[in-house]
Image (tube, rainbow, N blue to C red; front, side):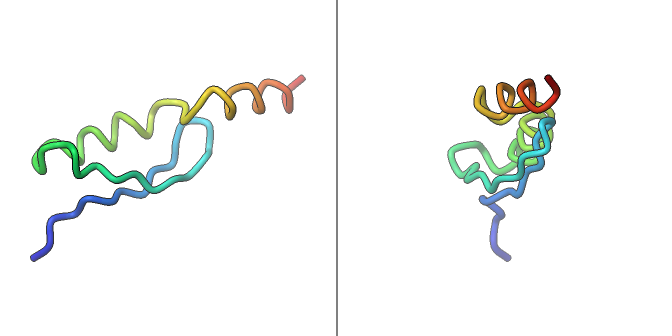
Length: 54
């Protein structure tokens, strides 16, 4: 059985990306991926979202 290292995330801004979480301990990856998905993915997405809403 392979240990999952790549996680598909949908960020709070709606952007989707695959993240390599192999630098985290295996038992902490799922929790970190869940927390990370609740964050904005980058400043650029936040700025773009603000421009679209203006």
